[in-house]
Length: 254
Image (cartoon, rainbow, N blue to C red; front, side, top):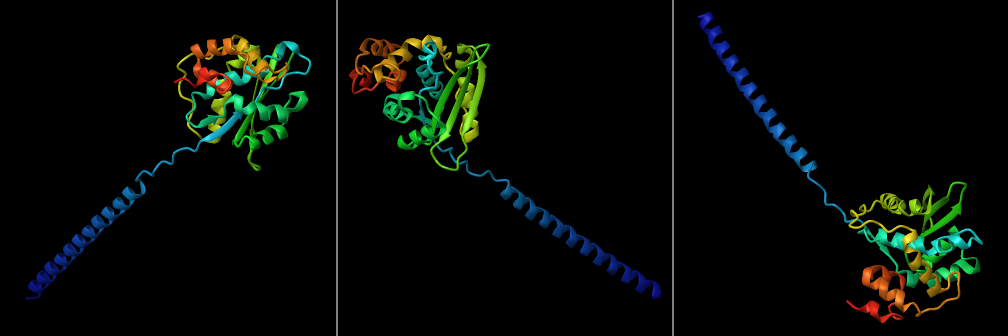
């Protein structure tokens, strides 16, 4: 009789243990499902915020005072920079013909920009950044510095500097703007569809821009029709960047 009671009690105990184990297993399974659901919710991708645009004005480059041979580079620098910025989806550049009156006013008779005057120019032009460059001579060639100066106080300027021959420096401008784009956390430059012109190859356009606005020589606005027409036939976008369409109506053509 005692053995039967023990046996019956043992079976009931075993049944309770099994039932308890099943409950524990079920609870563990439900808990794991709940955790998996939480993990799934946490890993759900967030909406990507589109990068904000940055408006910039490209100003003439500083060149050594009295160096007649390098004067044309003051305008050649902005020409090549505009060609590079065409590959950016988030940098919006002000046409040079809109920037030049402010550039002439802020640089003064020295035709030289400082950090203060370039920042003031950016403010007057209602842009976020002003890009200024500088060429200086070295024993082996030239040194180029490109500074991106913010209009807003509290923002930190960005500088790119390289040394080399004139065409080598022009070829480094995509690197300067790529690094600046990374600094702003905007989308990188799109791949180049055409090879960037060399600095020396745009000298004719640079000298024409100088005459148009009177940077180093007397201004002759509206008298570059032949050069504007030639440039428009090969690169309309650059022509519209450099020359005022109100003076050259052909630039308004679609």
